[in-house]
Image (cartoon, rainbow, N blue to C red; front, side, top):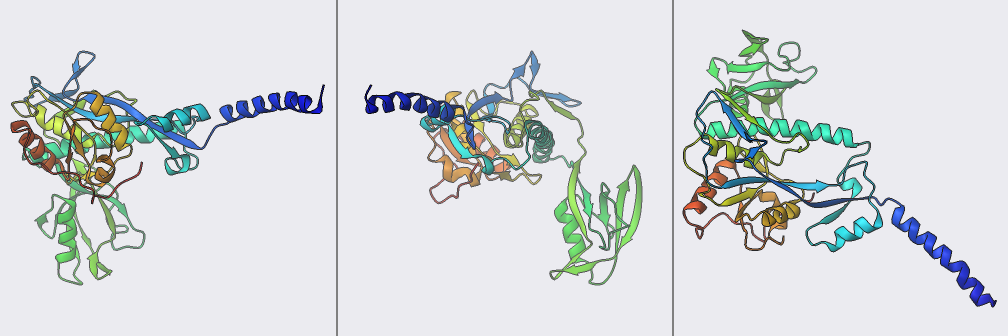
Length: 354
């Protein structure tokens, strides 16, 4: 046996070993691929996806409103070379560095728990925005936190519902901020609040911070709904990105007549209490999922427009959705005329990563 032959025989198992290691060693990546699309106007296990108790509801709509999801490999999942290469070669999938998606110490359990909390919060906000659009007053500003050493320390408590400031009713965060800032400088404020079911009035001093009058609290909102709206959504589906579509579907169920007139409309976007639509991750994969579900129109958060316009969407039309009311108006306009001018994503729009 020659030296060259012996070297070749020794090299073969080494190459095999290297390939085995390359295939089995986990890589620091996360794979995004198109997930489910869920028709919020449909049924699940024979029950309406949206159930309303205490008010008329209309479930005979002809058409679909679908929120979109993304399959994302979980924090504890190891990505191998074959899976990573498959995702790189798939035009509808994407591969991201692990540390751009997950934080150190994040696990499957913590990720699921956070996703469930975000979904629950997004459902409440979706209902609140839809009811506000229908003319209901459902929002109450609350104390979300009190800064140590501030004028409110020891006077206001986390969870206090704020009803009035110096005799003027306050029904939103903006109204509280304005009432605190606009009062006479140096004068304390009488704050009417609800704490543990009891109404009371407290006096709070003010301080100047960055040239503005403040009382040292963080504000949030609580909701008082006139009737119950419940979503029968799989508990495995988490995150806040369904907010816009849940709100549109809630509005549709609470009003007579179909919103989409038989068409399939899909979309995505977080929703703030003021109705603003926020960015999400995985826009390309969500567009692909909606395309495959037969959607004709897709609602895009403004900050995702830069990425969305390059996604392979087929004939599906993209609409820039700044707020829930604007998205609602766009869908109604498009339903009446599929060729109507609608807010568009453009090349000048920014992009938002996953």
